[in-house]
Image (cartoon, rainbow, N blue to C red):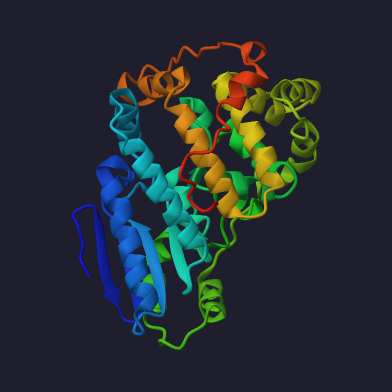
Length: 352
């Protein structure tokens, strides 16, 4: 099995191991990385000597900060088609992870955002640590939560997923478990022992055996801020428009509501309205595949949207953190503006 400089593939005992290896770039995903991971997972799935797969990120900072948005930004500008190819193959990988036939143990230590959530939250055994910072921060760069997040977020308790998707605020271990994006909290210092223990299990092990093993090493994740504020979140984020949600937040008392409103006010108005509509559509969708097809269509619309290029410029290129959104206000974003993101990309990933 081939490794590359950016992804290290190895076998240890009965475990197949995938290690993302772009630590200076927070292990952000490139198309070759997506292809290497997908190939390794296919090989491990049919290898009788591999009982489980373990996915981790090299370096001290995180599992994966997401897709390489500089590449997507440049592809959109030059019309190379690389962005569409990346999204298509990344989304197919996300779907494959959700249906993986063997235990898929992913270590969400440190930063796990965007595409990193796609590599982890669809898996069967999702481990967070005291260092986890998980987020879908896309409304802050003129984009939207993708990689199947429009399937996952609506299935979080109450309106927690709507809060996550609109605000893009990073959450820790307890909140990730509360929202259904993780299963276990293990101390970061214990992860090497966890990898060794999983690898040492016999080939005949089951998913339940791995769950039980991880439980023996699990620690208390602490209090979930989302759970503590659930009543307020459920009241405020039940609205069918972003304007309704912001008004509801203004009517609430307390620091959490005020902080949330302040964060959302700085996000791209177009992205906010697009995200809310995608989340509401995801809530009534049949499966992950339907959501991924819908997201791919929205991706194609994003490539023709001012706010994506402006958001990436402000966050990654010039780093002035001062995007100039257009339209600049929610009231100027019409239903027709959002309709254009709901044109299916052809060919569909899964549909006919």
